[in-house]
Picture 1 (cartoon, rainbow, N blue to C red):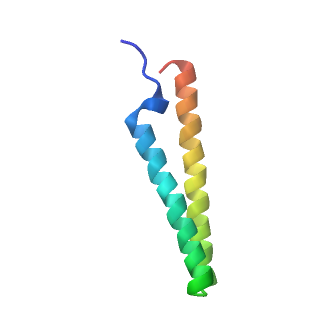
Picture 2: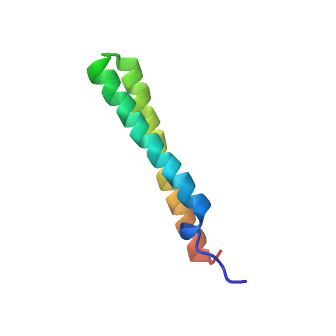
Length: 72
């Protein structure tokens, strides 16, 4: 059986899309909390949510690239 490229696997794509949506949601929350609601703690929580989403987005990208390089 031929090894499949994980970067083309639907689960990796879905995971990365979820974390991309997490980043957008976190940035939106931070922007709304900073400009509309004037709530620094909520803005910080949104920024941390976006940063966590970014780190996990990059992590799963590296994970897929390494698995593809190993031929899995």
